[in-house]
Length: 351
Image 1 (tube, rainbow, N blue to C red):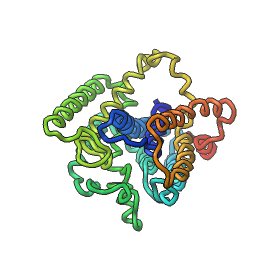
Image 2 (image 1 turned 90 degrees about the vertical axis):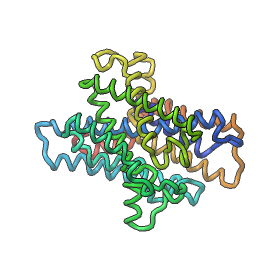
Image 3 (image 1 turned 30 degrees about the vertical axis):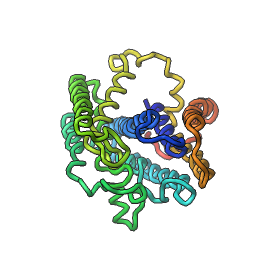
């Protein structure tokens, strides 16, 4: 799932940098792209939260656990994620046709915060985390205008001073901690679903009901079901309450489908069919950062030029997404330790 999550992110970001000419919101291609976009980031954050939770629980259960070891595990990881976010921002900076400012908080700063609070999620009960998940899900209804409901993209990525930067990080940036920590907590629950199968079934059932209800309400009220931003039932910027429920449900169902009999000691669905994705799953952070170098160059070259037609844009997007699979295989066969993940392993005695 790690590989699928990061490849979905690559696809969405590529489609955003090279959108085809003449595609409107109602076009089927736009709907497909939006569907990937709506799933990519929630899946990426959830799987990352899952991985952070596993490492945190392993550390806390170690017989040699100390607060010093906890700090040595969490602080370098968080700082590395923040540094990677800055690198991503510079690679796709607005001055060269990109989408960010150098200090824009994003998904990696969200994961940095998740790393620092992971030990808390590891020691509280499954039931309390479930309650916390539902509490955070309704936060968009409480935050209202504080989440920047009517903001443009450039307002969302810009901050003037420390206080505004903290607001973007926590409340109204591209991936603010509130409410996006929802997916980190969901990742911890998914890890523990093997001991709470009935809970997963109930959450999935409630989620499916929320999808049906949101679609019916969209049809009845003539409000678009899903848009990246604007007036719709599901919005990405900012993340709405229905968006959290629907995308969270899709993440649970995706994990459930791919898991197969793995939770019972068997094999994941499809057996070894998807094993070719494993190398990409081992270097998701490296792929995430590296693909922005490609997109930054493309954004710079496309400044002032017309958009591509739909077929060339589609082929370029798919090619850039899939090329990371053989590159990851080559990487793992030849230079497996030359990666951001490798640097983290070398910098810490525990990983």
